Image 1 (cartoon, rainbow, N blue to C red):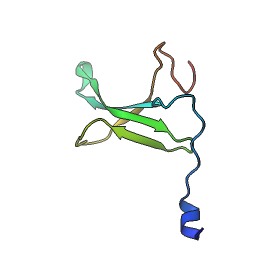
Image 2 (cartoon, rainbow, N blue to C red):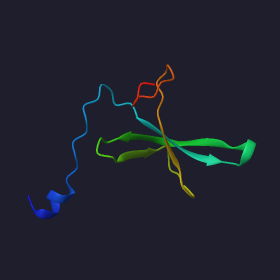
Image 3 (cartoon, rainbow, N blue to C red):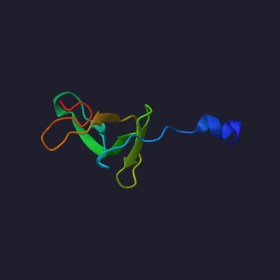
Length: 82
């Protein structure tokens, strides 16, 4: 292994019971009372502080976006269980 590949190696992903996304990627639209969020895609926590983001379809994203923890069907977040 060379020094370059040694420095760029990523940590292995933690074992997960499912491959469901851990986060939802959304963009804020509008202002004030008219504020809404458009879902742009999903993301997975890689366990090393980084995310893998998978946008839906082919999009041009102007400006920034938010990454929110995904919620289970019962309304609790997957990360904290709250």
